[in-house]
Amino acid sequence: MTSSAQLNPDVVVRFAPSPNGLLHLGHAYAAMVAHDFARERGGRFLLRIEDIDSGRSRSEFVSAILEDLRWLGLDWDGDVIFQSDRLDSYAAAAERLKVMNVLYPCFCSRSDLRQLQEGGEHPEGPDGPVYPRTCRDLDMELARKRARSEPHSWRLDVARATAITGPLQWTDERHGPQQGRPGLLGDVILVPREMPVAYHLAVTLDDARDGITHVVRGDDLFASTHIHRLLQALLDLPTPVYFHHPLLRDETGGKLAKSRDSASLSVLRSAGHSGQKLLQDLRQGIFPVGISLL
Ligand code: GLU
Image (cartoon, rainbow, N blue to C red; front, side, top):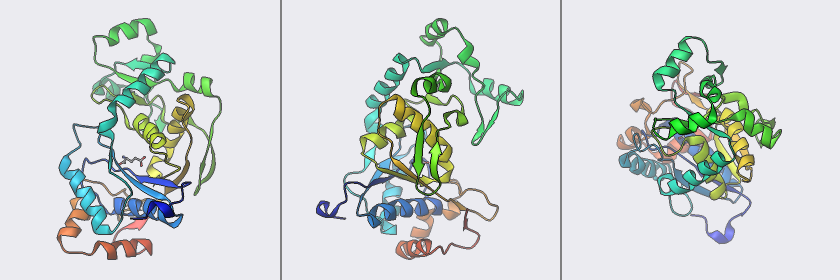
């Protein structure tokens, strides 16, 4: 651990895995990039477990994450943070957004969405089809009434939100200055019907609450940052600097997935491999056969 006397207060970075599977090489790489980013600048490195999805999060995956990071030799500062301890703050922020009139209830079920998608009504976004704002056209008063008895999620009305905030900017240390494009992912869900809060809202609130100065994470979340920037503006939160790093890919060019047990760190750990050696290799850009950086 770095002693607090040596810490640079201008740099606070986090690694924020979701405990819904075993970590794989891609996570080792992501954790290493975030850790080294902090340490090279004399900053703090925090560990936040993003366990808001109680249906998929498992305590055994939390234990495996902590063991994997220790095995890799990546140390973090302070106590491990759990999003499940913060549900009240997410609910309060969602209420605030409702009062601002930038959330609307969406009654579309998964099969409704599938049908809309098959009917070609979803415009394509960088992360897949974008919601065609079907429920945005419902009468708001009626929709709020229905919301009292019918299952629903709450979506961000990006058009209304951007009308409040005006144009936004953010900076990525690797990709350069960015003009906000909050519409890229469409009207994302901020409060799902089966979960207390969605990733976008929880992560934005927590990065502010934890005093994160630099969000270091994979390129797969680059488009999401446009939404996070919009939420920061709506909720008067500071905007960190971002650093989206390249991702490790398998031989087919696909993203490494948690379900592919062969690449999991636990398997390597149990097989007696050295985590420190693996990390050393990753730092030097030496990857196992079939794995490359994209
Ligand atoms: N919890 C997210 C994940 O495991 C990452 C969140 C982030 O770094 O913003 O994919």
